Length: 209
Image (cartoon, rainbow, N blue to C red; front, side, top):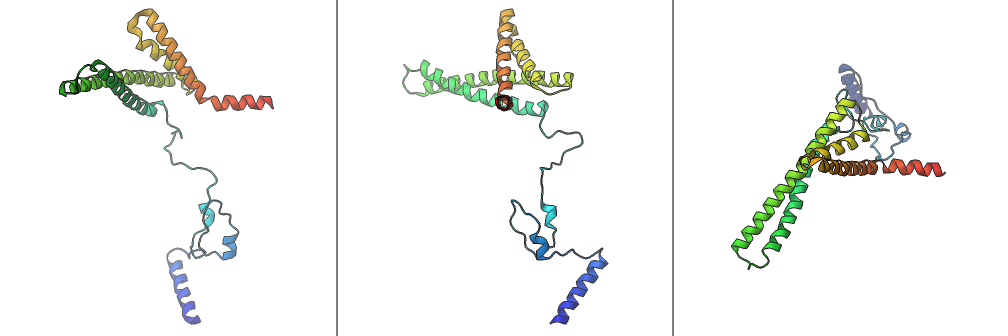
């Protein structure tokens, strides 16, 4: 029995030396000394060094020069698509409300259903077009300002929101442009404040102590 086990071990060692070295083996004592935080215990029969499985930090495989977060250009597609879908949903609800209100004196019949359906589709398309246009302008201004300044911060957000409001209401005269700019400035400023709320509250609490 011992001779056969030694013979098989010799064959394995010979094959390991033939193909570039034997497989490293670790005793139970060596495996017991390796911390396996957040991992289930490994079998001592696995010929794997568990130290290679310990990851202290997150690692990402990214192209050369790429950032770990998505930029404005990548987020533009999500912003525009999400705005169109949100506008279509809100417009459909508003169209249903308007259709029921305008046809409340009519009995439930095919003409009434067709009129309500037309109102739903018309309002849904209108709201989707409006919110999609706003998102497109905001994304375009944001990308252009980021490329021009060479930096990504809240200044780009506030500037893009202000310019979007001004251009969106440019057909309403100077007063409309001013109102649109103020609305865009307020909304983008509130969004920037929301993104930095944790930082602001953390800095203020640290000053108190």
